[in-house]
Amino acid sequence: MQRRRRRTAWLFLSPMLLVLALVAGWPLLRTVYFAFTDATLFDIAFHELVGAQNFAFLASDPDWWAAVRNTLIFATASVAIETLLGLVIALTLNARLRGRGPLRAAMLIPWAIPTVVSAQMWGWMLHDQYGVINAVLLSLGVIATPWAWVADPSLALWSVVAVDVWKTTPFMALLILAALQLVPRDVYEAARIDGLGPVGIFVRITLPLIRPALMVAVLFRALDALRVFDLMYVLTGNSPSTASMSVYARQQLVDFQDVGMGSAAATFLALVVAASAALIIVAGRVRFDTAGR
Image (cartoon, rainbow, N blue to C red; front, side, top):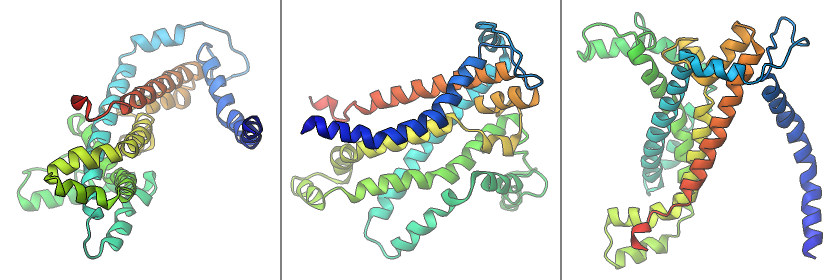
C-alpha cells in the first residue's frame, strides 16, 4: 500500500516536474553554459568556451562588488524592517478591535499595486523639485532645502529601502497574522493563570508558536529582495550607488550585449540566492528557547 501511494504521488507530480524542468531548469542550464563562453548578442550562435574568464573579470570589477554590496544592504535592511513592522501590524490586527476587517483590506493596497507602478509613483513623490515629500518636509521645517532623494548617492539606496518597506510590509503582516490566527486562545489563558505578563507571553508563547510561519515569510522576502531589479531600475536606473546584482546583469546583457558576462553575473546571483536560502532554512531550525535546554 505504501509503495502504491508513492507511485501515485510521483504520477501526479510528474507533469509539474516536467513543466518546471522546461520552464526553469533548461534556461538555468543555458545561463550557466553561457557564463563560460564569450557569447554576445551580435552573433550568439558563434562563441567559444573561455573557462572562468568571465568570473575572473567579475572578481576584479569594482562595479560588480558595489552591486553585491548594494544588494546585501538592501536585502538585510528591508527584510529586517519589514519583519519587525509586519509583526507589530499583525499583533495589532489580531487584537479584538472595531473595524479590523476594513483595516486588513486597506493594509493590502500597497502590496497589491504593481512594483513598477509604485516605484514610478514614489519616484514622483521623491523628486527634489516638485515631489510632495520635500514639500511636506519644507513646510514642517524639517529640512531647509529640497533633498535629492534618489539622485544623492548617500540617500538613494535608503530611499529604495523605504519604498520597498512601504510596499512589502503588508505581505509580511499578512503571513504573520495568518499564523497568529492559528494560535489557540486557551494557551494564552493558561499562560495568564501561570502569571506570565504580556512580554513573557509574547516571548515564550507567541513567538515560538509562529516561528515556522515567520521563517517562511523571512525566507520568501529574503529571496525576493536578493533578486530585486524593477524597484531599483525604475527609481534610479543604472546608478552605481543603488545598482543590484540583477541590474548589473541586465546592464551587461542588454546595454553591453555581452551574454557571457551577463550570464556569469546571473549565475553568481543564483548561487547567492541558493546559499542564502540554505542559511535561512538552517537558522530556522534553531529554537528560541535554547537557553532553557
